[in-house]
Image 1 (tube, rainbow, N blue to C red):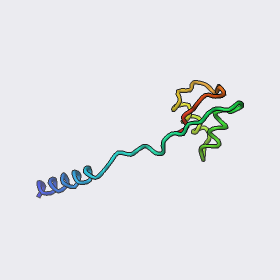
Image 2: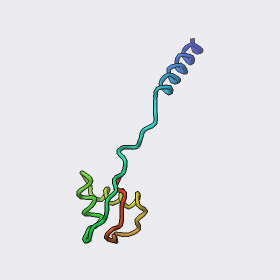
Image 3: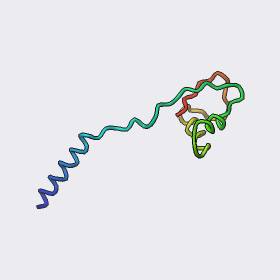
Amino acid sequence: MFVKLMLASSLAAAAVGGFARPSDGGAPAERYVVRPGDTLWAIAATRYGGDTREGVWRIRERNGAAGDTLEPGETLLVP
């Protein structure tokens, strides 16, 4: 009985694994060109719903930004 249960469980797992596919991780990042006077906070506030701090963190992580200084003309990837 135990062998049949293990065999059925293995077949079910193989069937699910055969149809499953990896996630694309959400929408692709958009490019944003920094304008004079832009801040990470302002960009995050217009692009993300909810907590703006999380948006700032995501932009920093995606672009490898260490600080808050942005240069006009700089291109950011906004996830």
